[in-house]
Each structure stands twice: as C-alpha cells, then as structure tokens.
Image (cartoon, rainbow, N blue to C red; front, side):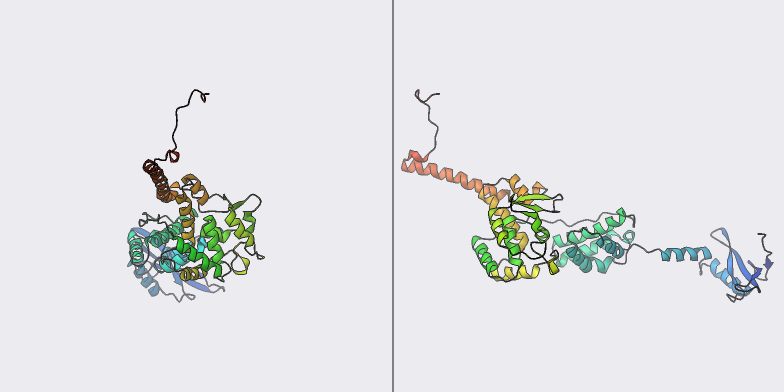
Length: 389
C-alpha cells in the first residue's frame, strides 16, 4: 500500500494525512507529531479530526507535553496498559494460591498466623519489593508480645509462601535471607504423680465426647496432635496390635505397637459413622479441640504453661525414659522422631535411672558389710575340682 501524502501545518513537528472517517466514507484529517526523546526520533499519531476533535494547535500542545515528559508516549502508554492487565503476584495473592494446595499440614494455624501477623504488613507487596527492614520490624513487634517460637513459625510461613512463588515461577526470590529468631524448643513438659492422677479423674468425669479421650490416647501412645486428628479406624490394626501413622511429622508413614492400655481404650471408645477415631464436624477430619481440652486443663489445675496434648506426649516419653527399661533408640522409634537430637532431651531421665540403679548396688554392698550378710553380695567363686568342667 503506497504511503499517503503528508501535509505540513504551521506548527513545527505537526503534520496530517487525509483519511476516511471511521464508520463512513467522509474524509477526515489524521494528525501526527514528530519529536526527539532521549536522543530517539519518535513519530506517532496525535488524534483524528472528528473522532478526537483534534486540531493542529492541540497536536502541537501534545507534542510539547511529551517532549517535557508531562505525558507518556503512545508506546509507553500501551506498555503500561498491558502491564496493568497482567496480575501482579503479591504476597496476598501467592498466599491464596498456596492455600489451594490439597495436602497442607497445619493450614488452620498457618491461616491464623497469616491473618494476624503477615497480612497487615505484606498483603499488597510483591516479594522483590521487600527489604530486610520490613522483616526486622515484624520480628521486633512479634517478640514484644509473642514467644520466639511464634515469631519463628510466622517468618517461616512467609518464607514458604515466597519459595512457593519461586518454585511455580510466579515471582522472583528474595534478594536476602530471612533471619529466624533462636528458639529453645527442647522444653520437656512433665506432671507429678498427683497431677496426673487428678487429670485422669477429671477426664473420666468430663462430658466432651472427644477432648478427654484424645488426651488419654496421647498419654498411652505418645501420638502427636495432628496424628490424633488424622487417625482413622482403618489405621488401628487390633489383629497385629499396631497403629499405622499416616503422613507423620517425620515424613514417611510409620507403624507403632498398639499397647494393652491403648487397645483397651480403643476397644471401649464409641464409634460413629465417621472413618475417623476422633471425628470433627459432620464426621470430617477434626481441625481443633482447644476449647474442650483447655476446660479439662483448668479443672485439673494443671500448670499454665502446660500444653495438654503436646505435654502428654512428653509425659509418655519421660515415663519410658525414666523407667530405665527403654533405650533412646527404641524411644525414638516409638515417638517416630526423625532427628535423634529430639529424643536426646530425655537422656538425662535415663541417666537418673542408671544413677539410681548404681546407688542401689552401693547400698546393697554397704548393707552387707554392716550386717555381715554375704548372701546379699553376688560374687564369683573359684571352681573346685569337683565342679570343673
């Protein structure tokens, strides 16, 4: 198609061509402007005579604004429009996409952490916009009122959301590392014999259909809170005396022995139409039992910092370790702990048991020396000629 004739105007850098009006065969002038920006020659349309009510003077004014950078070029405006149509992957949008995954552990707790501690600061920001100061402010604010563990879990959630965006190629990675607060998570919770007796009495009188039973099974088996929530009747093998733990914290599925106390408890525990041992609303998997458990904790007068389900898991492990009859490797297997360092927190209890055994031997020897009773001392005697083999 041949180039149309250009007609100059009295305004520098402004010309027009003769074209047809849109929607009719009527002749219409189409105005163009020519100017330089950043050393580049730019030639673009300013507008149509009738459709845009364009005149040479108005075209000249547009040219002046674009030279002075008061108005974007046509190309800059088109690129901005295209960019505006592409949704930006903010932290808030990444979180919604992250939540849509089906097999997420602890999603209820994560959602609470996000809404309370991350959403107010990061929802509208893209990962590449964050700077270390943004993270530091949230860390400092959290540590004023929350535990280091809560702060760590919150920042870990932010890191997971961002890494999710990177893996899905939705956003760029952070240009820095999120520093986590140091947490001493080796706290071992325990109860005295009197406290445990009171707790069991309160559980037996409690009317909540699931809270007390869950606490009992945690004490009998050492199962984690999430493992109790996910436990199905199909996972309890009464014939082989085993409990199958699906998707445990350690990763791969695990099997632990079904001890006599747990067996007796589960055989008496009422079944519903649900496949879950401790079903939630409408027979679905339970996601929370805090209210019922805290009520039992309050009635039993347990320490304020005692975490009921987690604490009973510790109590289960502590009693086994202090018995002196269970080695740490076996204890690690029973607790389905992947990292042996987590089991080592109970080592001092086993050491105390060994110390008591050693003291007992010393007491027996001392007693025998005082009383002159050789029968209480086990010793090796030299074999006689008659009993040599």
